[in-house]
Image 1 (tube, rainbow, N blue to C red):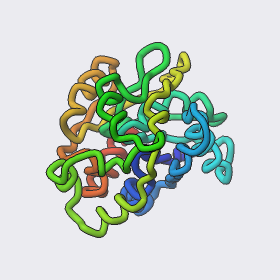
Image 2 (image 1 turned 180 degrees about the horizontal axis):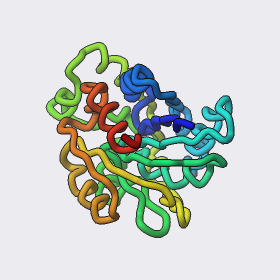
Image 3 (image 1 turned 45 degrees about the vertical axis):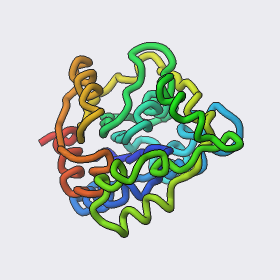
Length: 231
């Protein structure tokens, strides 16, 4: 049975960041799910159980024996061990795409202290601006080559609570009981790609900015297939 690609977007952005890649994977004959995490920042912390629930609920229409390949972008990588532990179905592969990595042991902070120090002054009534509003235009513009794509991604972004970034996400023992791999777009994630390599994972490089999957969805889809689908 061919595994289903489950493309998990960063809760800082939205599912549209994966939709073009999903289209290319479907065109190549693969089944794909793109669960939405746009509402995980609602209510009280912790927020990681809502991420797990959103992925699990999105897979309910799929047969319970259907295997899946989990693909996480950016800080969605931190939730991947909890997602894997929360699924009652086979997971045949996990791919971290320009993503944060979970701690090797113990809970993982969503944001390191220096990022929290950067974010706290931005919060208004406990809520942060949208992710692309954190940065200067000189940092944001290179991530987009298509104005329509930029408009879609920017308008879809949630305003997350600061407490989302203050949470710690559990790393269940044995979550990596299947092949894991990493796709690097570019700095500053090169150190994380090196960490993935040290963990014994396959690592591939597809040069680009942090949202490169929206710029080169065909190349991203090919790279995912190369990493996880047997020849």
